[in-house]
Amino acid sequence: MAGEEINVDYPVGIHEYLSRFENSVGAVDEMLKNMISVSRNELLQKLDPLEQAKVDLVSAYTLNSMFWIYLATQGVTPKEHPVKQELNQCMHEQSQGNNRQEKGWQAGQRCSFKICEKCSLATKT
Image 1 (cartoon, rainbow, N blue to C red):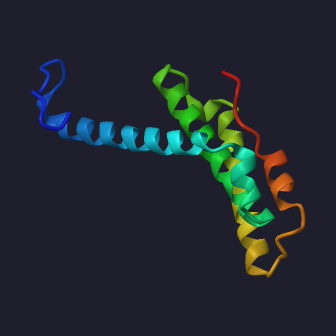
Image 2 (image 1 turned 120 degrees about the vertical axis):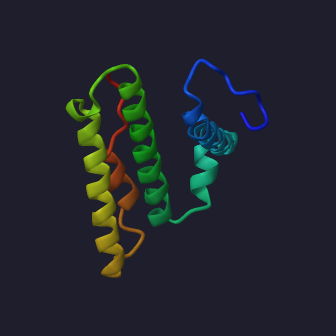
């Protein structure tokens, strides 16, 4: 959008916001391309179990957040959809992980599976 002629189909006052939004979407697209360019197993092999759990949790939260946005664009109220529970569960597991880490919890104690079996990805509409 930068350097392009302003489209008269929307108010001129929101052009800057739309331009920033387009840049943000482009940045997310680049990150996703980078993530899918490496196999998940290859990525996780380089990480200890605690780091694996963090990657899984952030991935689950991110995908659920993107699904929340998709629902909103389709006219569905996300607050009334099961995706809200998934996001709450992810936040709960994040706080549990932070508590474990603060208490000196050892990384090799199945944290990756424990967190991710509770925080599944939203796939239903």
